[in-house]
Length: 261
Image (cartoon, rainbow, N blue to C red; front, side):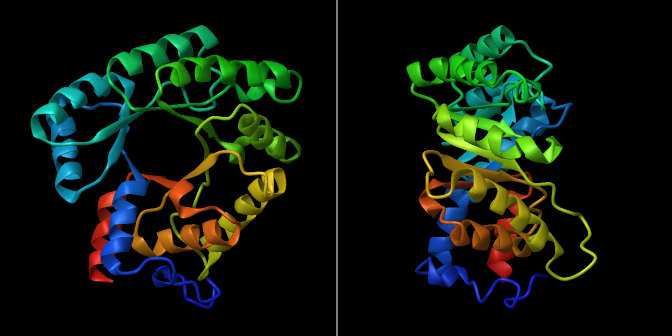
């Protein structure tokens, strides 16, 4: 557990009027992620039903599951669908393949499209990097769907991390999604906080007050106590909570943790 000392006294009650208000924010700002390689329809329906029962606003599922998920949701309740259209690292799909996947996801009634641009273009061909992003955004904007550029910045050489963030924002997606590889087992209290702070500082160095997009943070945010440092850092570095999302497969555990905290 991260102590209040590590969070400089941060408490969600400074921001939210009540625990219920905080819970409502979590349910509407967590992208509940479920991306198994093998996803039979029964498991998908079980997940969707549980998400609806908990009150989540959206889930992120594989593009191959969007159509079936939408069909089940239409019979069961209300839930928005986010899908990821390209491979992680982004360089194992051509631009045309990503465009086709984006169009397919929209036709399947996905409300938000997340994609990873080709990171290998950053060093030698930054204009091609931006052109690829803009090529996908052209489709999402025409369909009036939210777009998210997913950046695994922990995989990048240190000297081009800032370039990846800045160039992506310059294309004006709705969100920049940043993956922070949190440690499953901390060796000391606050280790993940300090680790996450390094990445928030890199984002801040690249963008500063020039925040033209929203921010989504991915990571092994697997319980309520691991969530608090991320929220603290978002406030510390000037991100409005209305424009901030959390991507995690542990949304149920986080809500359960809030209810028992």
